[in-house]
Every structure is written in structure tokens, then in C-alpha cells.
Length: 212
Image 1 (cartoon, rainbow, N blue to C red):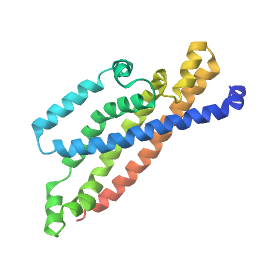
Image 2 (spheres, rainbow, N blue to C red; image 1 turned 30 degrees about the vertical axis):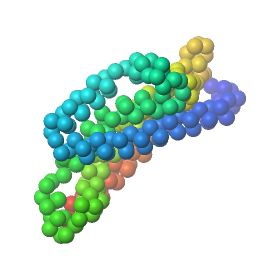
Image 3 (cartoon, rainbow, N blue to C red; image 1 turned 60 degrees about the vertical axis):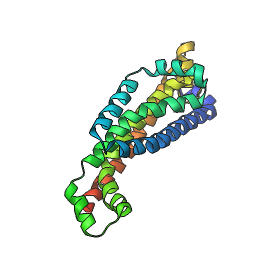
Image 4 (cartoon, one colour; image 1 turned 45 degrees about the horizontal axis):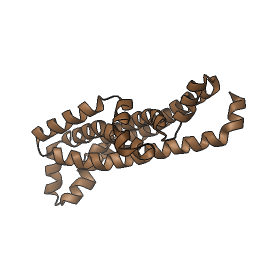
């Protein structure tokens, strides 16, 4: 284990950074799309049901199967991996973001309007701070899921920590298997810890924001 680390730490670090890059790009794009979709479906319960049901069906498709479907269209590499990860994240993020905004007490919005807030001020000073804890909860779940699926994405030449893990499995080489598993799990745990902290911080601030 230690011998393998000392001999290959540079390539392991490169794969770790590639993995983080794929995850961060996927989450960023996913948030932009999910926020737009959530705002759209908030206006209609029927549209909300249709969108969430469709995203739920897509989410139930195994990741390897979705990769296999898209490879003839998009080819191999990071682009296909990011595309699939963005699709998977929509169900988690849209559900959480829409639920976050629906959970806001209408009387708080009315109080803000009574104080003369315009639409932008209502969103930035009241709605977003109150919705943020639930939104971050969705981001946390999506991030951990993305880290795990990104590991599988190495089978389509996307790079990342899955390269170490699957190479170890193909070679039946235990140090690679263990390091691939440890690094993937460690990255997921670290992301979860950071986002739990941010979620708690947002909850604390939101409790103060309630006093409009």
C-alpha cells in the first residue's frame, strides 16, 4: 500500500484532480439548469409533476446503461461523463430546490412586499436565504452521488479515481483496488462534511432572516 503510494503519488494526484474537476463542473452546470427548471415548475403543479416524474424515470436508469446509450452519440471522454452526471443530478436538485421555495411561509413574502422590497430584493434577501439550507441539502446529496458515478465514468475514458480502482480490478492488484476505493470514499466523505457545515451555517442564518 505505502510502496504503491510513494511510487505513484503524482499520477494518483492527477487522477484525483481530474475527478474533482469533473464533479465541480457537473455540479455547477446542474445547479444552473435545475434552478431554471425549478423556477419554471413552481408556477404549475401539473408541470411540476410531469417534470419530476420524467426526471425520476431517467434517474432510475443505471449509469452504465446511460453511458452505453450516449457513447454512439457523444463519444468517449469527459464530455459524455459530465453530460450524464448533469442529467442524473436534475432529479435530486430540482426536487430539493422547488421544495425549498415552496416551504417558505407566504406571510414572510407578504411582509417583505409590505416593506417595499422589489422582486430582486425579495429573492436575494428573503427567499434565497430561507431556501438555502434545503438547497444545500440537495447539493450535498448530488455531490456525493456525482463523486460515486464519476468513478464509474472512468470506463468511458473520462479519467478520475475510477482508473485506479478498475485497473486494480482488471489486474487483481489489491493496492490499486484499495487506494481507488479509499480515495473515492474519502473524497465523498470530505465533500459531505463541508456541505453539512455549510448547510448548518445557512440554517443558522436563515433563522435570523425570518425576522423580516
